[in-house]
Amino acid sequence: MNKALRRAGGTADKKKDFWDIYFYLPQETRGYVPAFIAANYVMTYYKDHNLGKSLARRPILTDTIHVNKRVHFEQISAVLNIPMEELRVLNPQYRKDEIPGDIRPYALTLPSQQIYSYIVSEDSIVAHNAALYARRDVVVPVDPSTVSNDDGETTTKLVVKYHKVRRNETISMVARKYGVSVSSIKKWNGLRSSRLKRGQTLKINTYKKVRVEQPETEEEETVDVEETVVAETTPVAAPEKKKKETTTTTTAPRNPERHKVQRGETLASIAGQYGVTIADIREWNDLKSNDIMAGQVLVVDAKKAVKKKNDTPAAPAVHTVKSGENLSAIADKYGVSVANLREWNDLKSDNIRVGDKLKLKADGKTSTSSRSRDNEAAEQTHKVKKGETLGQIATKYGVTVDDLRKWNNIKGNNIAAGQNLKVYSDKKVDRKTDKTDKKSKKKQKTHKVKRGETLGEIAEKYGVGLSKLKKANGIKGNNIQIGQSLKIPQ
Figure 1 (cartoon, rainbow, N blue to C red):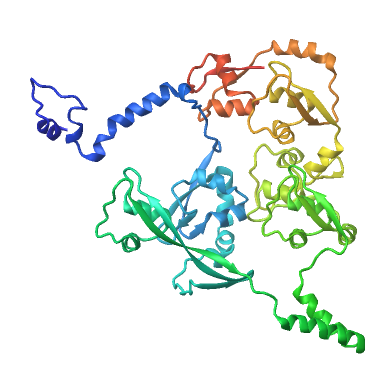
Figure 2 (cartoon, rainbow, N blue to C red):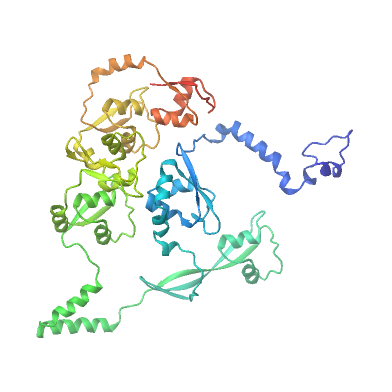
């Protein structure tokens, strides 16, 4: 700063401000004040530019563990049943979804209840698809012009593109955009230096893979003719030809039955419903992964499904916790919810230990999936009244807020007066009880702020909107203090 002041001619008599010495400052220093002004402007006038506030959703409690092995996020997600997006949010420093722990120990952030599961299951995580995620020491060259795969032979086709240079764009930025080298761009355009002019047109050579479809040969036709002749003259040799044919064709269900995927269903729940395996459904429908969408139609072999339904043994009443298991994995295995497991076993948190025995039944009946429970319970329609929240409606019908969100495809806690909500519950709500509800509203609910809590977490806990919680307590920002008593709007 002093050097810039001297260069700008600043003295005790002639004082200079930031903009007077702007062009005498280093390039990285020039952006400090403009960036600060821009941040203040956005925070003050965000409403004028249609910008809104948002709260980052993170687990309430997190912990870290040092990893000294090379691990991919896909391996952690598959074994511990943690979504990939959650791992990326908690560990944004790993840009390629990979922890290079074999170089030196790196820190991994996980939800606190999953730390013990990672320690116990670390060997299983590293061994999961180890060949796929292993570090390659030797690179085998492949001819790029022709590559064969399962779908047939493919060849590379030259595609010429033209790029118009924009303001402040460099040749390295253009090369990175198209995945080519700087030297290649210079060679294609006859450039001697790396300087580009605004509006200059550059020629870029890219390559695209194209499948080569080979027509059926005459040999196949002659084989079919020979088969028909042999089948007429010598029926003994026909079964051998049929065996060869069946090895080349894909298996399809003999007695197809169509199933339309409902919202919330998974391949595991559909397979359990028909008494078949996930591999069977993927094979019948040519699925490459377990991802399905609501409304998608799947084909199921009806006879095989009935046979497997009769052969499937009854679900056990008690499950013994094994190494690496957690509540969500056990719930998915037996088609129940985590809330049910907590209720049936009097659990206050998700922490379980190896060897614990968990009940899988309630009232002497084997538990069923949440989808089957929704079908068994009576469907009711609730019209949202003015001032009602998801927490009040859930308490009224004896369900949870998560159930209401799932049944009505609600992402947050915001609902509007007059909105119709689907509720699956056997509990009948008398409309005359609204008067008693109004009396109960007079009893004000309060919450005492604990260490580490935020306004968003408190609003989520009670199923109310963040804006309503702020308005009820006269809070303008997001700052709260430990021990502060907050009114919970009804």
